[in-house]
Length: 396
Image 1 (cartoon, helix red, strand yellow):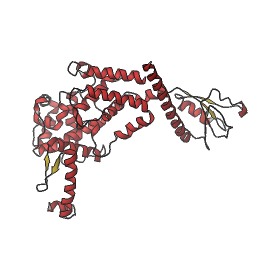
Image 2 (tube, one colour):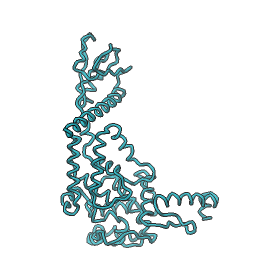
Image 3 (cartoon, rainbow, N blue to C red):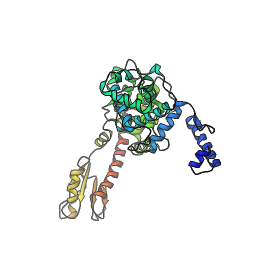
């Protein structure tokens, strides 16, 4: 303790006070603590590793490698790539980064003599496949030279642990092939079909959503998208849908909750919000489908000059607006009967039944910002109207 206090340039009493506060947090949230006499972590090994997985995932950018020089990054990258290839994992860059940190934290604890894995439920073919592959001989050799440990079943189990479970799916193609093993898959597929019908938006990658949600429930707190200690990046994403598409969000949450109810195992410390986040985040072309859901608004551009902004908007926003440019010399000829919105840099007389957006200067940056707000409000209103009509039809 004295040596650590000296290195931190604080008094021994201050260090003890800080460690006691830290232990209060660790014990409450992660069920382990720091032994103040030996300065080692005591508690459930899985909880200790989970804490450091979240800590290193959150504190570093995706390009940082905080384990230098103890753990060579390229060696871990080769190891993760080997396992991903053999297991046929489908993953993106964020999941790959998660696995790099996951394997490294597990490796550090393993090298210190702590073991987590239980071989009974895991896939043990990796060490055999590694031995049979001449091109991976160098990987085995480097691992042994660096850490004085063999790449055997126990090592793979401790490094990749839950991600080698036979209960996980590696890619969406396995979903339809596993419906006899995982009986909730058929129910989940039916729920996603019902969700499509309720909100009138296509879900074209149901198997991928089923795989992602199933794996998340299997992994629990080790899931790719729970790798944070403090800043919950899911919240702003979910808040966006709750605020801009409340009825849509209500239906998604309802069906996510039904999916959790159909899951055969008990779920501890899990919320419907996470499954909702996964469903929305995995939903293929969701924002494109949302944008196509809105009825085209009829926009009239009344501007001084040669109509350069109007022509720009026709190209840039033609998907969302039917855009016409007023070219007459007399504003009295302006017909607003077939128009939802007017944008102008000219003071116009008061008009009924049409929204007028006035700009001191008609430049793209300012106009696009306000048109985006207008579209969001219109989409929200249209979703609400369609949802209410749908509810009335169900009741009748």
